Length: 199
Ligand code: NI
Image (cartoon, rainbow, N blue to C red):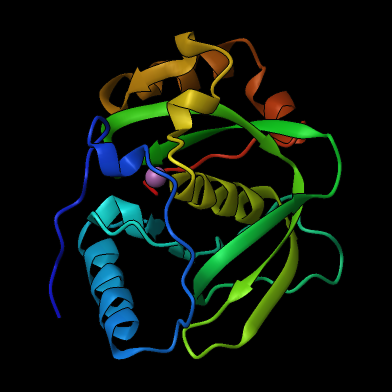
């Protein structure tokens, strides 16, 4: 296994549409996924897409967050690592929510990004099985962020207000300002989520 080099914003591999994977269950793909897991852990990431390690294939891995304020009653909380080939996302409604995101390919920055509040996604596992889930909140946000990487899209390209693209080191100003204005709790009630790790 190996820790792979992470492509950063500006590298062409991050702007390309990644290729479908015909058969996930090959030694080459097992090797790729294991290296992606090791690379993500080393970088302390929450998720990683293959183009971020210079491999233009439709593969993403992520830890769906355990703490989901927008979780529907009865929905199970996915803590396990998910490996997904050829993922397809279907929004469950037009509702979008804003939340802060970071990305291993856009280091030291953080941005407030609108995402579908609720999605259904499906894809193949490493052994060729099928995953299909309906998810909300942070889980939905992470999946949308990762799958965007497969279509050459980085989170700043999804932003509608670039004044909310900030350095990590200045991020505390936003939390303090929101606290002072007593807005922060309202935002959370509106479905905003915090992400303090990169994907
Ligand atoms: Ni990312």
